[in-house]
Image 1 (cartoon, helix red, strand yellow):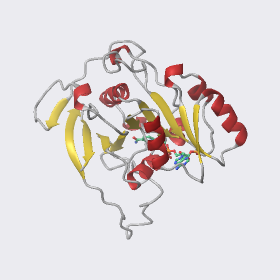
Image 2: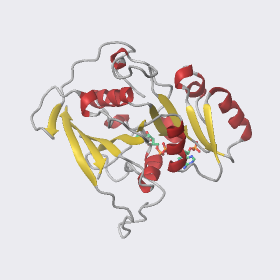
Image 3: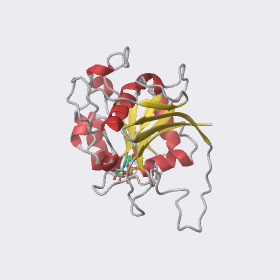
Image 4: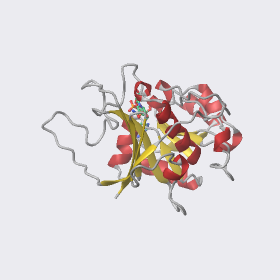
Length: 267
Ligand SMILES: NC(=O)c1ccc[n+]([C@@H]2O[C@H](COP(=O)([O-])OP(=O)(O)OC[C@H]3O[C@@H](n4cnc5c(N)ncnc54)[C@H](OP(=O)(O)O)[C@@H]3O)[C@@H](O)[C@H]2O)c1
């Protein structure tokens, strides 16, 4: 949830050059470039992730911010302004210090007729979550917490006092549980910001509609995980092939400051 801009301050001018579908277009309107499909009748799941040029997702700081930049934060801000809910795994929420999303003046048009901020939805078995993420959200954008029936009872009770708690039977919150619960709440424009373990579950379930991937001009080497990790398809070594192969189409490619901004849609 990092931002270089104070709440309500005007963002600095940054230029985004379009490489696809219209090569050479300057001053791209990001809200238009990343608009969700119109007339959605189900949740549309978009992921926004950043990777190094050699495919790493986590830098030396243990976070993705080593790979980020002002243009990347600008795109992230627009994607948040467009969505109804920001969905993350609890490890990302803890590591990146997630709090309720702060309102921004520049979102006024994007959010007309909707709450000033998207809700944050967190998936967690342990329920080890920062209190501010639960208590600091406005009434019209309460944090949603997905957990399992085995989660510690005392934590379940305290989370339920402040947040919208969704408890799922079984050992795991499945992507289908998440999508169904968001649909029940009318939250169709979904933005997941990972992390790699949660994203892998949505990819494996075939429920990811769109991947907005920033390719950052860094090399992180073999020590860095990819933007998907764990679960089905996890390689045990180079001799293992993935069981998954979902075609995607490159719908948009932008460049700013040496960073590439891809928008892939499931074919
Ligand atoms: N490059 C990027 O774009 C990017 C984006 C996001 C994050 N990151 C980085 O990725 C790292 C964190 O990602 P991660 O992959 O380790 O973790 P993650 O996907 O963010 O979160 C994993 C956690 O989510 C909960 N969870 C996931 N699936 C669940 C399920 N099916 N049922 C119940 N709970 C479930 C569990 O929480 P509990 O532990 O609470 O039970 C699990 O430990 C951080 O270093 C972060 O900086 C990078």
